[in-house]
Image (cartoon, rainbow, N blue to C red; front, top):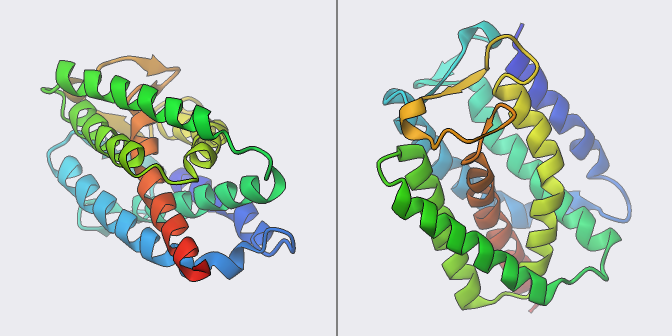
Length: 227
């Protein structure tokens, strides 16, 4: 039995079925989503493969199907397609059901806070490869966002905060919050060591760096279709 596989597929069922909700109609927006998904998944899979080879993190075979693409289990590959889908779905749901939540000024402050904190961590922990790369990418995303000032910054901040709930559930399960051993382990040499229960602190920035580019591409393609 693959606990990792069951977790990822289980997390996908709800958003997939609700994608056909008449009000949200997320299935109509798939064409704006595919390019961002392919770009983000490719980037993160290459990153993931490199870090797995160098044992910066790894996977417990006890909780896997045993099917690998390179050094990555199939469940991990699916993660980079299913989790971004779920997050963009949540983003669209929040925009449809809470259109009054703009958070324009708060969104800019949010990006400044994330940008400053990621820069500090990048400088202070440059020898920790997971901390350094995750926070550096996050910092670059924040600089881009603050320079371009797209209208959806507040919406993204709202989406990110809402996504923290499923993030803590899924990442908690992956890092051993509910099992005797973690499904995904991290080398202590390459993380700060701060944990949110079992979740490395860096995962907050990793989640941000994965979510931002795919929503940016999604929103950019949608806006071009309307212009």
